Image 1 (cartoon, rainbow, N blue to C red):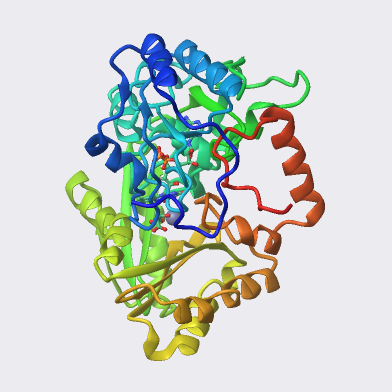
Image 2 (cartoon, rainbow, N blue to C red):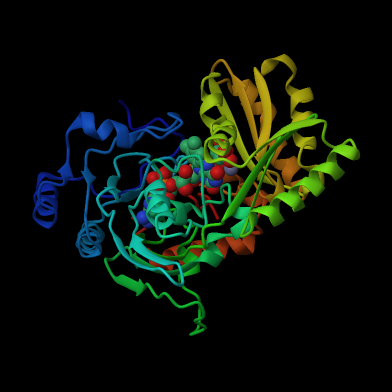
Length: 427
Ligand code: FAD
Ligand code: MLT
Ligand code: ZN
């Protein structure tokens, strides 16, 4: 295992010593992991394309413990990589070198739930699917859902500003998150964990941490607004020549069925849709959604996957797929376009038997230039992490990148939080 696998240089952070381990052991007894086998899973990302060589994994249970850990790391100049469910797709969740891994896995308690407003307050390490079950038992749903729900943490969702499968209906986390508790790089606990719908007391600081990918602070708790559980859910899976999955949700079964069937009649009569199937029962709905949710996993079976997560004007969404397909010819196994049509979010994925620098050369900067030409975004919902930092300039002006850098310096002057990630190396 080598630490020098990427074309970046390790910054002059301290190296974890025996004395550091003893201090961590005092802060979080028996939750300082140094066993290489246990560390292996936390050093490798979900796609298995990034590998760090951290020697220590810390598992705090409370924000006070996180605060102690960060205060100490800040003093000692030790770099820290916060990790949730490790399902991130841009290499942000694992260390680049030997950064300490700070896991939220044991910060998994629900703090409160208001069953009239639907406001959930919980720790950052709660698994999304478990939160879904918790609120569904109380007649609400989480405002977000994604294929990684079984592993990803709500803190990780916020840190990446995950979009997912309910974005079109319930909007962004920038709207549904009401409050946050964050521990800053020097250990300061920033308690903005309010449950108010309206709060204009100056700058909305929580927004800065949503999508900051562990570079500005460690999110330790969340207050989030959950919508009521819909009484009627319909899923339509339509064809010709694309597959489209449409989910409707509302409060009256007959009303929703009537609206959906008049839409389908119109779509069929106009020739837009030639075939499809409908589902109203839970089993079939789950089965249809699984077809969509498991595309990511299916593609990994094809070999190496070049992943692009792009925002484009909806009417140009698929043109990039056909252009890239023609450009690559037989070099690629598959050139696949899927995503979130209603959001204008294309996941362009190219598979090949193995990684090839020449195939990468044909994809980049072509894909990014194409996207910039449409004033699109080179990262719609997955974030920047380690993999996309050098291409931010395609979607953000230099002035914005400079401001991002200034904010980072303000909040994390020593740069110990998730170094080598998100910000371009030279902003
Ligand atoms: P991790 O992967 O552990 O971390 C991701 C980043 O957040 C890292 O930079 C990490 O340092 C930081 N971080 C994690 N926790 C915290 C915290 N508490 N405080 C500060 N920083 C933190 N994304 C979408 O947007 N939409 C999708 O539909 C979608 N579907 C997916 C489907 C699959 C099968 C997979 C594997 C991934 C998918 N993703 C999707 C990617 C998505 O970013 C993650 O699944 C999820 O949001 C990350 O959560 P996590 O807990 O796994 O975070
Ligand atoms: C999805 O929409 O399925 C996710 O964002 C994951 C992916 O892009 O592969
Ligand atoms: Zn997606």
